[in-house]
Image (cartoon, rainbow, N blue to C red):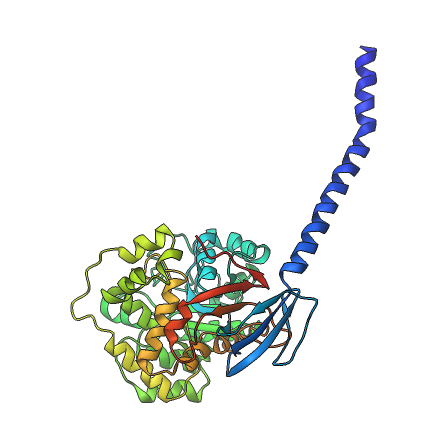
Length: 432
């Protein structure tokens, strides 16, 4: 018994030494990892064509140090850093998807592998929110993630039909406390739901004007952007009158509407122009084009491949022309446009990452020059959502970069010819 006690005491005395040894090993490993990270997220791209978010600069260099863009210029040198030959390539800022609904970390990974370095979620169900935020904060193999948290809708309103338990709002008197709860849960901005078309056609509940006014007021008092899901021209007018900052859809009850577009422009309300991607998902050619594109198909997950193949019945009379006409009204009125696909497992044949490149193509079909299509996918989104550290290739900004073998400022489909992607200066593995 005495020997057992002696052995026990010896082990106790040895514990501090063991703990110190473990601490030393971990410290050394962390030091090695830090050094590796410092080396891998610092480099120079030499002689590339650069679209900086607003304009194109030929044959220039980009110096990246510790994951941050240090400087840009044709004669810059940084002999202490690895050199990447950019001749014949175009470097653009990481794309920003201004409208998605994310349900898994894999979807953030897939977005990144197609050059979408930031995802702005427009309604994250509560059970997914925290894990997505943590992954985006700690990992460089997933896109960054910002979210409205759960959208704001009445009982039985649009968004309640997806089988998730979500909070709903009853009236204007609840607006302040409802917004407080969203802020406490970490909402980066706020999204309210106006379902005018559903209300008119099916009697689906929608927010009344008093509640909309109270929600926007409460959101702005917290210094938060407030955006609105809209469906009809009347929804647009109510949202603008209430003072929203942006719309995450176009109107659906008409096509070209110059007066409505001018109302948005004169009130500095931005609009997500991605509804063409959703309508395209109902038609046969768009998703099939992605599946057959050798620049896209190898990088799709099995889940996305099956989603793009999913058989659906195209609604009678479905056409993309009315949405295109509405988009052209917005373009002609010089409304601030942002790009978002509304990627969501309930939206047929729209996937995270790949569908963004189809959306860019559709913008050009609608009449946007390729350079402008790139702008509404990068700097315009950053400006609209007050993201002051991305969306441009500029000193001090995060090195979220995409290198393309070709010139997407002339041929927008060249965005698919991705050579390299960097997230915070760390090169991304593109294979799923």
